[in-house]
Length: 248
Ligand code: PEP
Image 1 (cartoon, protein in one colour):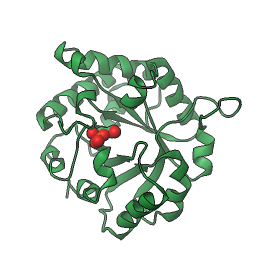
Image 2: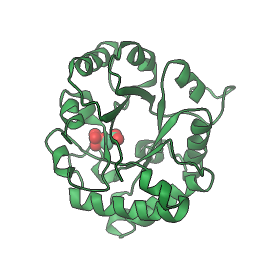
Image 3: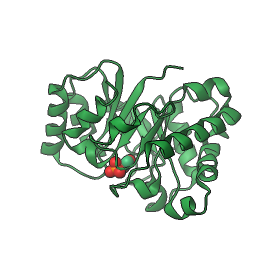
Image 4: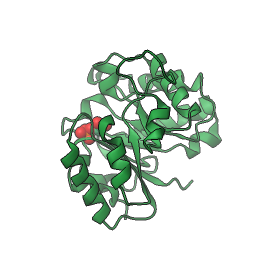
C-alpha cells in the first residue's frame, strides 16, 4: 500500500518571531518534493505568522497541543477552533514531553485527540516507551495501551497520523536503528489491524521520531512501515529540508 511520505517538524518551546520567520523563509526557498506532506508545529504564539508566511503548497501548519473543550474558563489552553481560526490544520497530541512533564494521561490524550478530530483538525498522535519500559521488554504493550485509549473512542482514523517516538531517543542524539523502528512500526500496525481493522491500519501513516537528522534519515529509506518522521531539534535547522528530501 502506497502511503504518502510525511515529515513533521515540532519546534517545541523554541524560537522567536525572527527565527520562526527565518525557518519558514528557508522552507519557502527550498525546492520541496511535491509528493511529501510536511507539517510544521511552531509554538502557539507563532501559528498565525507561520500560516501567513508559508508559501509552500505541501507545507501545513499545526499546533503542538490543544484542549478538549471548545471555549470557556480554561486559562492557558488553546481550542481546536482557535488553531483553525489562525489557519492551522493539524495538532500533535500525546507528545512524550506532555505525557511525562505535564503528566497527561492516556485518557486525556485520547479525549483531546477525539475532540480535535471532531472539530476538523488532523492529528499527529505521539506514542512511545520510556527507557525502563524498553529494558523491561514492554515496548509494544505500552504503544498498544496508548493507542487503545484512542481507538476506544475514535473509530475513524483517516485523519490520524501515528508518531512512534521512543522517549529515550527524543533529543538525546540516540536514534533507534532503522531495523528497530521497522520492527516496532510493524507491531504497531499489526495491533492497529486488530483494533481498527486491517483496511484502516494499512492506510495509517506511522512516523518515526527521536533524534532524526539530515544524516540518518536516508537510512530508514527501505523500511516498509516507516512512513515518515516527526522531527524535533533538526526541524529548527536547514537540515530539515534534507530530511524532507530523504526519500528522493
Ligand atoms: C520530538 O520532539 O518530537 C522529537 C522527535 O525530538 P528530536 O528530533 O529532537 O529527538
